[in-house]
Amino acid sequence: MNPPVALITGASSGIGEAAAKVFARRGYRVALAARRRERLEALAEEIRLAGGEALVVPTDVSDHQAVERMVQSTLDAWGQIDVLVNNAGFGRLRWLENLRPVEDIEAQVRVNVLGVMWAARAVLPHMTERRSGVILNVSSVAGWVAAPGYSVYAATKFALRGFTEALRREVAVFNVHVLGFYPGPVATEFGQHIGTKRKTAAPAWMTLTSERTAEIIYRMVARRRRSVIVPWWFHPVLWFNSHLPALSDWIQTRFYTRPLRLR
Ligand SMILES: NC(=O)c1ccc[n+]([C@@H]2O[C@H](COP(=O)([O-])OP(=O)(O)OC[C@H]3O[C@@H](n4cnc5c(N)ncnc54)[C@H](OP(=O)(O)O)[C@@H]3O)[C@@H](O)[C@H]2O)c1
Figure (cartoon, rainbow, N blue to C red):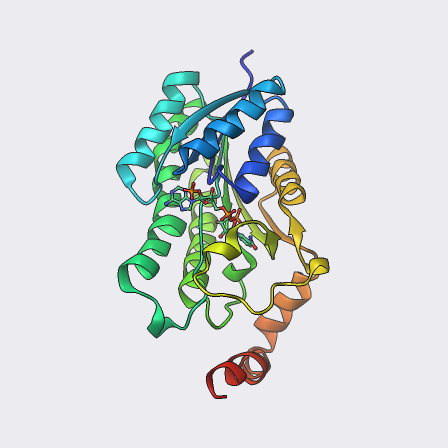
């Protein structure tokens, strides 16, 4: 029996990098995708030194042909993909009118939404034919609760939730499992790419480590957990947001938007 294969996008840092290490430790061969080749090479080397198998597939997921090549190169090298972790993504924290149409708005949609759809579409013929596979999409709690300043990011993560739910029902008959992961703040390089100097970061007690997050991803895949929101205390936040929407609007406007926009 060949060891299973996990293809992980956004593996050059943060959650994706940590997930690659966890899957490799648990006996998976890992295909590492992202744009920064040197980071992927270094990670692959680390995994190999620890006795694992890793393949570097430099990919810009905002390019659909590159995404198809990513899947094909993995299949050419190892003949199978058991797990696709659609993790590549980024956000910009800015008022909508200050986001640039292409570099900020279109790019977020391309990476966070289209890249995920293209990758899932590319692996599905293989998974449905084998009657086996897991696709895990990394959305965010921003896919449930939309915060001011993250309008486009939230739109992409809401979109991912809809895509994940529909696709799950579309391919379940082939024994292909589509899982949605909705983490809160995780300590990664995410904050370095938001395009704004944040005055305050989430406090440490609210923040997950990428290692812990990667373990949760692994467990979700192992147990085919359809949907996971972490940390646990986001459940009451989500409940509050959906059951008391006017109060939620008021709190966010009063304590977040107003002091920043109307000084
Ligand atoms: N950190 C958080 O608080 C948090 C919370 C909820 C959800 N998330 C989600 O978790 C996922 C991973 O983010 P992270 O926190 O680990 O941030 P990160 O450390 O900045 O990692 C982002 C990864 O995405 C890759 N990526 C970005 N654009 C890409 C592109 N065009 N093509 C291919 N890869 C691309 C980056 O690689 P390259 O730059 O090398 O291409 C990098 O490996 C994202 O989807 C994010 O939305 C994060």
